Length: 341
Ligand code: UD1
Figure 1 (cartoon, rainbow, N blue to C red):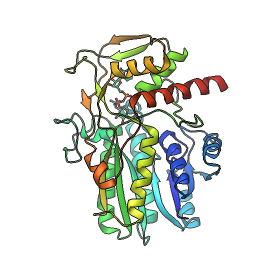
Figure 2 (spheres, rainbow, N blue to C red):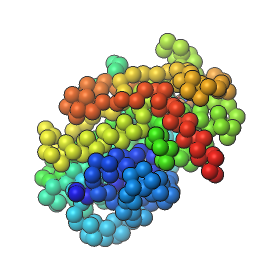
Figure 3 (cartoon, protein in one colour):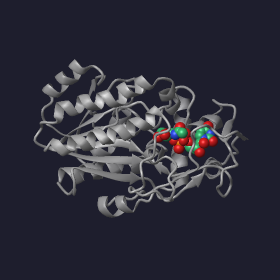
Figure 4 (cartoon, rainbow, N blue to C red):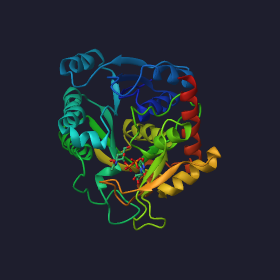
């Protein structure tokens, strides 16, 4: 059984990926600094898979502790690296926190593994690297654009660091997954998204409004050049996204990759407007959502959805859940966590 290190494995996408890794027969060790996650997530993972993953509380900014961790665990075959901060607004206010949390830590991890004979590395990247792409759907060949925020910049720089390092580190093989907009929760509702404070993302804001935690959803602009005037995104079920990590990891472990640094878009290929997401929510929850149209939010791109041809054909992965299924799972999760609080 191959041992896989999942950094940030108690977070939203990390925890769903741990479940899929264990289901696929991998042994998992999680490190997490608990900055935006709870140890209770281990119970959720265990209740789904029947296996409690090994866990060490570790902050990758602590270089000495990170070095000791890698000295102690020399049998790691692959790393899925989620540990990072992800709030766009916060990154504008505190850029150095983002460069330290997302970049310095990546460098520290790579320093520990660069001489290893064979190591697979999956990086959490984002469609944010494309900015407002000229052509829809967005393929991996679309040019990288000047980042809107330090957060977005850390994803671009992270990819460059990995690409440069994979060129000289013979054993290091990397796949960078550029996520579109992950939403939803595991069907068991044992794990899901746990936003810290007021959610910045659309779907948790919708479910928190419906449950009564927020008064009203503000829809940021309906004067965009789209069919209904609201922005278009590619909302992907988090379980579909989690499965893409396992497939990408196997590609590296089975040495099926073509180069030591590969990039794949991970989305559904379908764009949905903000109003379509609200309609989907109203359909699956059978209730009206209290929302109003307000001004545009600064920094929002008009439209972003994936060309998934490369992931479908080369990776052999395809998203299977519909928007309604993802919204229903998000709603069931919201209802469950408010009941048990
Ligand atoms: C945002 C980030 C992106 C990051 C991703 C991580 C920005 C500009 N982009 O993506 O870099 O990778 O989160 O999860 O912050 N909306 C509303 N009302 C709300 C919240 C959102 O109308 O209260 C709209 C937004 O205008 C947007 C859509 O919903 O059109 C999706 O927004 P969001 O969930 O924040 O995702 P992104 O902005 O696509």
